[in-house]
Image (cartoon, rainbow, N blue to C red; front, side, top):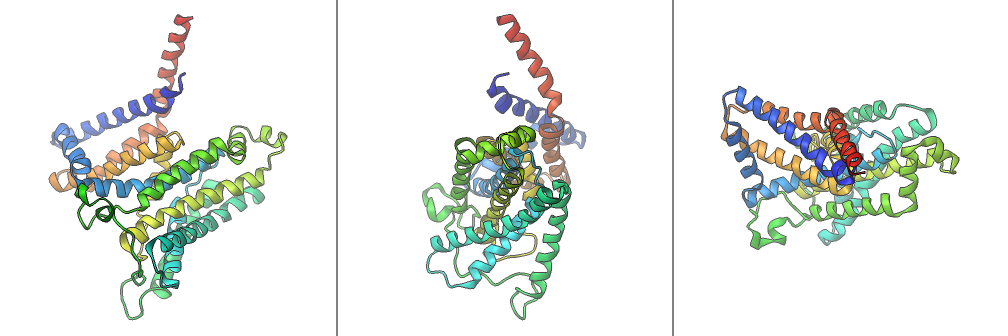
Length: 358
């Protein structure tokens, strides 16, 4: 089967099926599905305001999608992106509150180091338990999501919140990142847009992951281990090293998401800074076939669904927030769990085509 079929055609068919079923659900509640799609698309990409929020969400999903994708290449299912990104936010806050930073660029580099370090640390514990004790990576990473959530609540309520304040949040950072209005004022982004220079960092991360996985010896070892652990072991590749290194990279990428949400948008650490982006990253990696280009496109799609869904909920009150979640869930269902339902007949079609051509 041609590579473009696996990377492009099958995900598009899955997406079309998900949107078709979503249209049936919308029609069932008495709304016009074509009007709903038009409102969703216009709300997401029909104005600079919509683009600002769409790309802001896309940035979050790129980081978490890349984190899951890197782990997938080593046949590791890292579901701990939510907790790793939350701890990354803690790292960002501690770094930015520690010193008076003279310029946003220096603060950004320091915050990136803090975010990656804390995210990687939170991923290293389940990785060690898998590599040395055989613990199931899915179970441990899910558990660490809950531990991270409880830890952040405790710290924000009892340790690092502003003295005398009732709000569970840190003080505002003394530095802010340039947003899209500062960088591209002629485009028309509103001053309040959450889109900031972290979007450029996410694009650099896409290229870095591509170079790592397909252009380095370490990336080859990660993919070899993911394809066959016995063969990798026979070739002299250490499973313990691959598991630890892969999860450290995955956790660091998840932690980087906090740069966008904590430093770029909120400019302080608040409760639940991740807001589900860690779990969306799983769907993004699945739909993007664990390739950085596919991850970017899938993240853009989910960013459109998030922003367009908010506009759709506002314009059509009958379509509630729960309905938007159902649409997103259908996209995840068809691109993930039901992928083989489309893949098998498409593969048979191309096999028959090749036989006839021969």
